[in-house]
Length: 79
Image 1 (cartoon, helix red, strand yellow):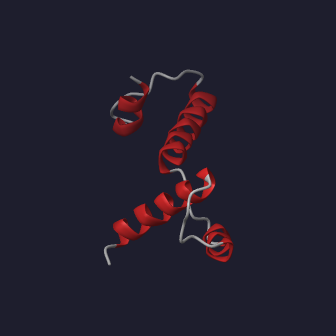
Image 2 (cartoon, rainbow, N blue to C red; image 1 turned 90 degrees about the horizontal axis):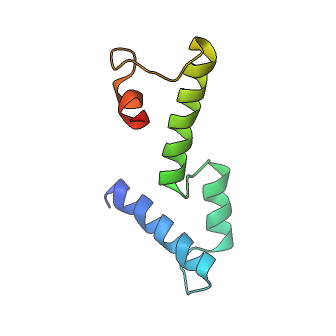
C-alpha cells in the first residue's frame, strides 16, 4: 500500500476512535504508534514546527521580519 494512504488511514481510525465510533485502531496499535512518535495531527505539528522556527529567528534577530532570502517558506507562512 501507498505509505501516504497508510498514514491517512491511521489518522482517520484515530479520529473515529476518539469520537467513540467503531475503529480498527486498537489500544495496542495506538501505543505502538505513539512509541515511535507518530504524529496524529499533522496540521498542528506543521504549525508548531513553523512557530518554533519563527521563535528561534525572533530570539536570534530581535524581530519577526524574515527575509525570503533567509527562509522563503517561513517568510510566506508569516504573511
